[in-house]
Image 1 (cartoon, one colour):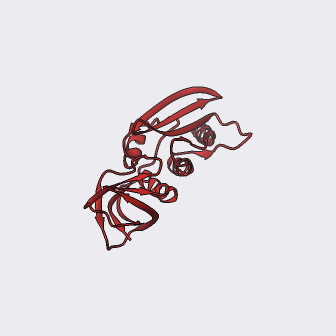
Image 2 (cartoon, rainbow, N blue to C red):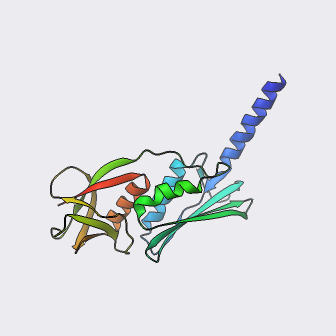
Image 3 (cartoon, rainbow, N blue to C red):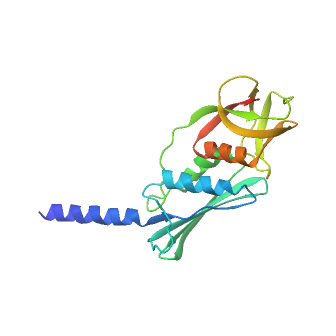
Length: 199
């Protein structure tokens, strides 16, 4: 009987704790605004026991994510507040958006921030462009200048995820805001772009 009471109390406490972890909308700087929406959505979906921060609620833990582009690198910070006081702050820096998921996992803390394991998938994407690239490999950047990928292969035919449009600038495809946001979302979900199909 005592074991049952202890177990029930433990499960109740754990359940209450799990409901007190909230994630605020991610702030972004020097990047397309929609990156913040996709990062928030990703964290809510893939952080264990997370719920969106709602106005008027008072969860024990609140995670405030922020993402900026400075000095040719993404700076991603996770600030955690406990009972409205700063509890911890951790940041990672990566040069390419395709590395964000793996680096974000290094911030794992089982007490309040624990990302789910996402297997890496290899994908192709389709981009509508103004002219054919003169190079066999290109990199993808947004109009804000942030580097989404390293150099990837280019093809004129094949299947892939339609992301939108962009324009060619030497060995780079500059994606419009919608396209760069879609690519950003794919990359933080641990998808690796193998090939860009140009149309």
